[in-house]
Picture 1 (cartoon, one colour):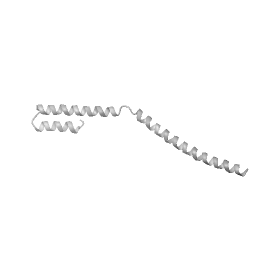
Picture 2: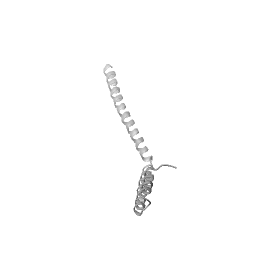
Picture 3: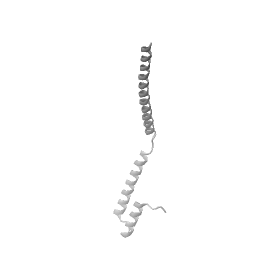
Picture 4: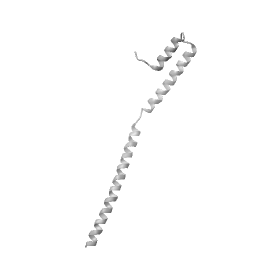
Amino acid sequence: MVFHPIADLDLLSARSTGGFDNNYVKDSLMLNLVRTAIATKLAQLNVDTRAVTAIEYALIAALIAVVIVGAATQLGTHIITTFNNVASEL
């Protein structure tokens, strides 16, 4: 038997008061409704993670592109300096 804290607490309180009355039944139904609504919303959040993965890959690709552009700019500057030095020596 699995212990469920909320359900078992409800059963214990019903037993200690001498039985199930209408208020207990209404509260129990409301509790089950809220529990079901929360479980449904949590399940909806876990359904599709493909978009999140695509965004992560896009951010990684953008970072790689920034690094490539920065490296190419630095390399271009060094190449221009080298060609200018060679041209001045000729």
